[in-house]
Length: 148
Image (cartoon, rainbow, N blue to C red):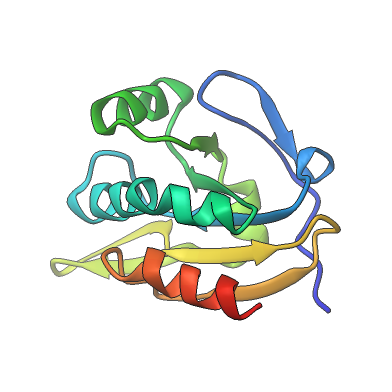
């Protein structure tokens, strides 16, 4: 089984989250940017599904290249009930291959592709979701976790 790489990232409050702090099944979802329409839709959908996810014993973290302050604002503005992790240098995103050249509105730029990893307490990757659709993803996750 493929392992999720060792990581140490700060959340919006400066607390360090790493492989060693994860206790059970964890959802790590990578998204492009705080306060953009698709990312807000995805984050609010996760928020609204949190009771179901917690019932399944799952912890959720969102990860983007935004700063702690931007994450704090995003959490407050949307009443998010999970932590957002800072990958400002895109080190983890690069290591996982979720950061790279993207195209949108006729422009090319580097950014994070919507990708979600479900890992167990030993950092084994149970599932990788690529090209995630913001609106359907929480339901897709719940279906996978209920089967598992």
